[in-house]
Length: 580
Image (cartoon, one colour):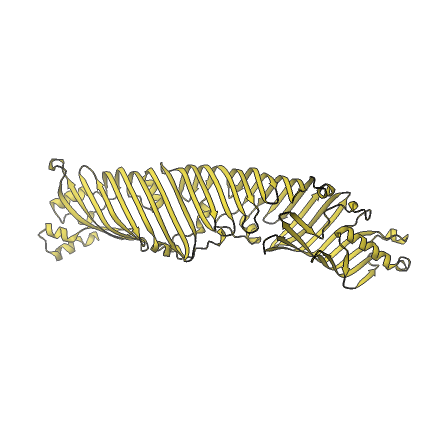
């Protein structure tokens, strides 16, 4: 109780001010009350304190408590044990010249020669603003609880904060701040831990024309999607982005982050390679090359739903491409096997790119369904929503497997080649299907149609036009060649050339297929051929193919059969009703 009378308050205040100047390099300005307290320990308390550098407030605090060591105080000496900033507000600026931490001591106080035994600095319920030069965005760290302790020129910082909705604990150790102040390298360790994300770095740090670091980087997350969402970043697909881990050697400069010797795992997919992140505040870009044994992309397929929930129509859900607008990407991947839903590709060389909000996936070469795939698919924003483009070809593939997985039908066997060029715009898949334009060419060699024996049906109807109309399905139709050429305009596919040929059979087909309605309206002619007739047709049967893609209705042209039969039309209609 008697100490304040023996040690003048002004002397304590002067000592505290010297400590603050040593800590910040700036003279404090106190706008509130100043008073000395004894219990629970001796301390000088400053209300509403500011430190001003240049033309802006570098650091401010609702209050500052300077705790005084009791034993030296009893002998008339003033020594500060700790400085506690309450409700403080600090700023960190990232510029082309480096990182400027305003108001925090990143050099040993001993270099300034002010005081020995520099006090520990604590921050309670603080806020830190992080601002990048050239950007209006300010990332805010809130609820900051931290302590800074010096040991010679070594600085250790420990604490916790909230980054968005993400609570984080952090520890940083700089072995030699004097070396950093002189532009040379110092050992540096950092660890950030939160519920969904952990980051560790162990290497070197220096300030030479900006912040530079090199060393071992490790990142681990039990849910990368949760971690990115907590930081205000939206993954580009609805599925995936779960468990994530990576280890690499990292080299940071003011303009880029280069990662080499990378070993990364995401959603069970493992890859190795290197990445380079260009740190542009307006639009960062990522470039890299990765190699893997197996890459399963099935869980990312839900990003752009193709079919409506009841599977009767194309999806009407709006396409959201906002996730593609925040960064640029140039990523190349080679893999022994790539899995996408039930489709497998082998010996894959592919590239993914994002530029100006437009995503492009290019396959330079891949083995699929026993054939060779090359192609490019792209999606990007337009005034009406989104634009898609597809230019792909598959050569010498197993048509039963390929069309079964791509189109959901296994009615065609043989070795085929398919080329497809499509484009369309719209706000969802349904509207895009109505705008589709392009072309498709399919040719199949030495194959067969499954589910129908056209030659057998023709021979039966040649003998007796009304025989067996209820049994059109069953069996198979072998052929030597099948060719189909489609011209697509406004979502309607026109069969310009479609023909099946064998030594005993020829089938031609024409008409339209509606992509938006997913139905067929086709007319064809099936002809029996005989070698002794010089390849000419001995029997022609016109037929109709109508109905949905999933279950088309095939029937002979009634008018043609009536002309070959003596049966009146009403009786004929009754005869063919079971076949419909």
